[in-house]
Amino acid sequence: MPYISEGGVKYTSHHVRSPLASINNTCQVCHRESEETLRAAVYERQRSANEIRDLVEKELAMAHIEAKFAWDKGATEAQMKEVLQLLRQSQWRWDYAVASHGGSFHSPIEFQRILSLSLDRAHKARFAISKVLAQLGHIGDVPMPDISTKEKAQAYIGLDIPKEREAKKQFMETVVPKWLETAKANNRLVSRR
Image 1 (tube, rainbow, N blue to C red):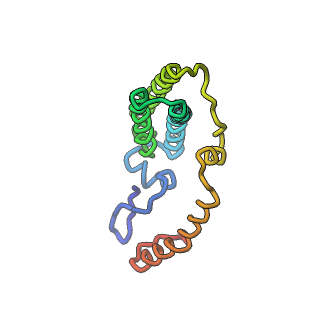
Image 2 (cartoon, rainbow, N blue to C red):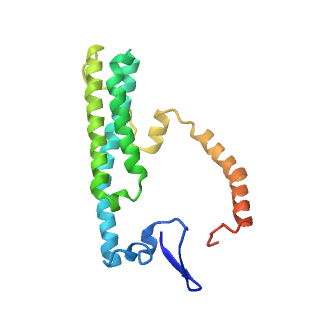
Image 3 (cartoon, rainbow, N blue to C red):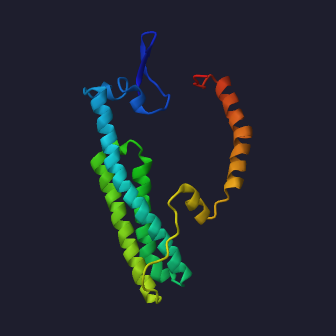
């Protein structure tokens, strides 16, 4: 969080936003490189980390779809025990890494190590699923749905978008105004409007 001075008092700003919006008050408090160098380093580390993240997401999605296919073919709890454990391990590692947000910059090696372990578990899960499917008499590829866009993925999982939009509209019209009112009353609202 950036440091701010007001009236001769130095404090930490709690206005949450990208550190890149104020490099001189965030990154350059510790790092002496130029803004351009720091920005380039952030983008390169994120690009590299996101390359692994994208692979994990593809493999993990395919593993989940293949697991459902195995269940639909009659797989038992006993047959799926190893698969479920590997899926959990992969998913947990993906969740942990991706939820860290700044991990790709501040700990790129650890971030990529965790994602690599997630990818490993997803691959092992897919291999275990193929063995279960072979036991059930299915040899060959599992049919994969087209989930290449957000809309297609939402349709595949049966998400009712009009219903979700209506729920969000109601939330924005009823709950958010109350939050804003409370924030204003407590002098906690930071806005440029």
